[in-house]
Image (spheres, rainbow, N blue to C red):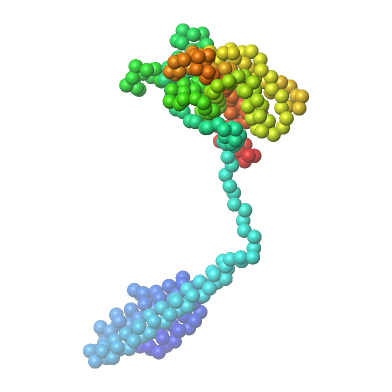
Amino acid sequence: MDFKNIGKEAEKDLEKANDLKVLNEIFRKYLGKKGEITRIFSSLKKISAGERKNMGKQANLLKVKIEKAIKEKAEEIKKIAKLEKVKKERIDITRPGYKLEIGHLNPLTLVQREIGEIFQSMGFSIIEGPEIETEWYNFDALNIPKDHPARDVWDTFWIRQDDFKSKEKFLLRTHTSPMQAHYMEKHHPPFKIIVPGKCFRHEATDASHEIQFYQLEGLVVDKNISAANFRAIIEEFLRKFFKTDIEIRLKPDYFPFTEPSFEVSVRRKKGDWMELMGAGMVHPNVFKAVGYTQSPSESGWQGFAFGVGIDRLAMVKYKIDDIRLFNSGDLRFLNQF
């Protein structure tokens, strides 16, 4: 058997090998099950014992030599590939980086944050309340008894009684006004609070109505408080919010939990008047419901409350004509803010 020629042929094949795939084929050619070295070992049984020992020794040395050469060649190929990869993928620190895509806040979030900052600058505290309310806080404590026709104004989502182990009737709050009662039950005046939050009403959805929306409730209780104080605060808020000079107008209105009540309209730069919110002086019956035993005239405490749609403010500020866009999840809309 010509071990010398087989060794030289293997060396030539290894010199030509330039990737691991070719090297694997060389391994099979010489060391595989049907390779040259395997055939040599298979043929040894056909020769005498004396020749078999000598031939077997040479075959073994050739096998070890080829194995070692293939291993060294594999390491060389891997090293070259690694260097080429590093050269190809190296980072040029002088090149400008890619601009990262960042998320965009919903305009409702932007408006709610701005509202909070403005009122906090005027000494107001921000309070949160539950979205699931009892009939007492949502209606009764706000001077809206069970048989009062004003209840028809709110299209209420009532919650099944068997979901609660209570005789109380529960609902998804229709406005943030219940927090007036919650807060006054636990806090003694004077105080100034705003309550932003989500509300729910069972009504048809269109460009200006949603079954869920955000509202801002405001409540101020102190001595010597009047509608003039409300006007001054709201005018300052709207001026800062719209970042322009504005005019406001108060017209008589009706809300069960305020007396007197008024509708607040606003206009900018002598434009058209636009109804924006409802407000009024806190009704004495609301004070009584929360445990303020003395009447405003006896205690000297009185206050005003107001409510405005945060969605409404966002639509006016950003000139959005469809309230449904806020919850659409359309990135073309959100990416504008």
